[in-house]
Length: 297
Image (cartoon, rainbow, N blue to C red; front, side, top):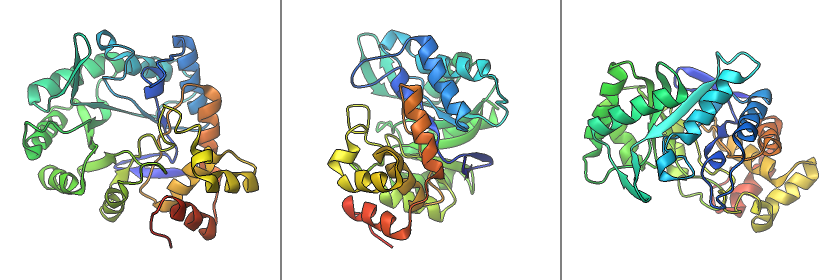
């Protein structure tokens, strides 16, 4: 498996987005044993980065569901997990009757981290990412809250999610040089809008983790080769799935990018993981970029 840098860590170029195991648009969830088998299949394929979040759950009263699955899967895998990095996120609230909100206060984030520690059954979180901005708070103040959690030893590294270039700059200024290690934004052929954030991360040595890199759980991932024929055409040439081509193209865009495709099935993540070994030539990369209206060359 190709490796890439994420702050002080070295992880697989393809990670696993665990969200679909507990929350997806079809509301279809595998049995716990099958979910754990999917995570084990990812680890078997060389994946060493698993992404989760506290709110990933079938319902509001099951918050922490996905974290518990991930924690159990890592603990019960047959191999060496010393190099497996689990990242989780907090800052979105989910309450009684599916009431949703945002909360970047120190009190909420501290409580959320404690809950995540219990769900994952770890002493400290390797990488904690601020999930979505709380627009009632000054962004710099939230970054200081995250810095306080790191000083307390509850989290080892800090990332942010769904962030603009301006917010990334604020985070870097507050946290200090090298202390912001990741940005997790939506990025895929159907949603290439975070290209500027990707390039900013590349310039400043920050890992960029695109969520829904294949197009999402509502059919976008399955239909990517139909919506963007170039991925299917190149896949046919290489004898691989369109999804593998999408991921290989994204990896070719920047050394800062680490893709985290979601999966509900072992076969899906095994196929996705193989994208790390698929090398596209410059013409193929440009064709893919042109198809989604991104710069080429």
